[in-house]
Length: 103
Image (tube, rainbow, N blue to C red; front, side):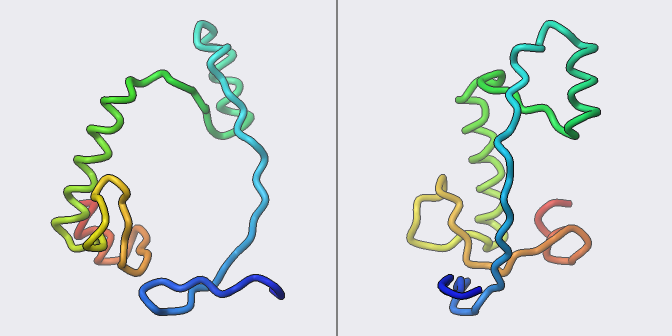
């Protein structure tokens, strides 16, 4: 990919995959229509709802998860924990490092 600088993760070059995504379809207009919500979920494979969950509760949940990440050494020192800056190699379900955190 010409013109795109390589990404670095903890000093290692990481491959870059460019993908174009369509904007999410906001489904708040269907909150009072369960059948229409199910149909949209079946058609799109997701439901995107804005401002349905209290922001403070989401921030609290984020901090709970980030505390686990920090305890497992996944967060980079010297940054605010809430930013969630990592210095670990990405991991996926099925890898031991994933289950160390998510189990």
